[in-house]
Amino acid sequence: MTDSTKQILRVQGIHTYYGLSHILFGISLDINEGEVLCLLGRNGAGKTTTMRSIAGFSPAQEGMIYFYGEDITALSANKIAKKGIITAFAEKRVFGNLTVKENLEIARRDNPRKKEHGIWTLNKVYELFPVLEGYAKKWAKNLSGGEQQMLCIARALMSNPDLLLLDEPTIGLAPVVVDDIARQIRKLQEEGMSILLAEQNFLFASELGIRCMIIDTGEIKYEGTFEELKANESIMKKYLTV
Ligand SMILES: Nc1ncnc2c1ncn2[C@@H]1O[C@H](COP(=O)(O)OP(=O)(O)OP(=O)(O)O)[C@@H](O)[C@H]1O
Ligand SMILES: [Mg+2]
Image (cartoon, rainbow, N blue to C red):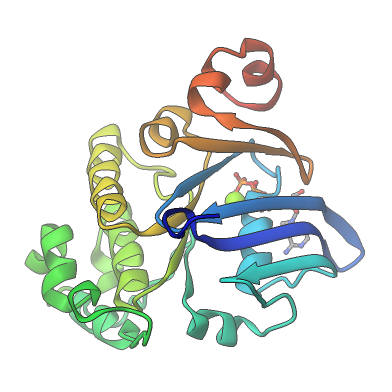
């Protein structure tokens, strides 16, 4: 492996349960530094659970997770976040009774791995999401769904992640807002951010990622490029809602 393809995350054969319900059956995936890997799959396929396992919210009971080569499988969610894996989940993760600016300020965290020019500040976040600057003093609970989703991603950035887990950032949003979010994620890509993106929106995902995986009933059923997947009608029909 050369430096230009340094591996940031390796997930090896994880099994995750909610109580007695066995949800993930040996999920494996790798992400290289600066890569956007897309995890596709229908409702209930196990996308969020995969992210929750990586982030330590629903720890894997079997299998291994390595971050920059270090075993993080059994670390607490808090420790994993401190190491630089930050989640922006589809469910609202903003503090409604704080302003937009306060939401951003309390999310700020230093990351010793980040070089000075790469550090996320309020100004840098506002550059990426100008709408948030306009609403800096607004209560977060009064933002629209799309704006809250942007605030959620912006909060994740304020904590200076090495790896961003983005769970269905476009869910429930109008096409024009989806385009906005796509543009913003593309800018993050250009900056070299490593991202694991869970999506049901095939078109949105295919514009951002090169490599994708399909998860279904807690197992990886397909791995390849979007081009290969597009050409594979039977897989598309079997596992995706298109
Ligand atoms: N807290 C929970 N307790 C029990 N079962 C759960 C829990 N959360 C999710 N599940 C189940 O785990 C399975 C995987 O759910 P998960 O949320 O990972 O799917 P998903 O791919 O993210 O779906 P969606 O696209 O709808 O968000 C589903 O069968 C779901 O019902
Ligand atoms: Mg989900």
